[in-house]
Length: 178
Image 1 (cartoon, one colour):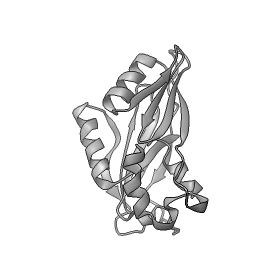
Image 2 (cartoon, helix red, strand yellow):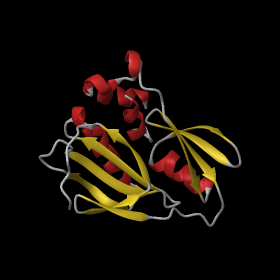
Image 3 (tube, helix red, strand yellow):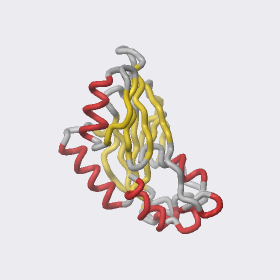
């Protein structure tokens, strides 16, 4: 399903297989083919800091690079840090979701619960400051999930989540205001 790729903006093919298997009909694109990797390019103010964060803290393997950009493998998806100048910092907007101030724009990936908890522990060990601490939200609703928000060194917002019931990733229901 195409929407599945959009949620997986930042993501190792091996790590996605368990989640994809649990998503039943949404586990593959049309025709039963595996979900292709997503490509996401974003601005950074310092490539050395980006390498430290994405290659070090996040544990992404580095691919191609130049003096202006760096490719990384994040859970099987290609992310690209593009140097745009030392003055760049992501401009935040806030959207209220489940009584939380969610930063927008943001990108991330849907993980399995054990992957989510492992990443949260890795981020805490690296003293990454959370915008929204790892926690469960939408408890008891079809969209029940673990979620966490944090920033890279250029202020780009990242959200990683894990659905309590992975098959509900695209469940349609009205979420109450709050």
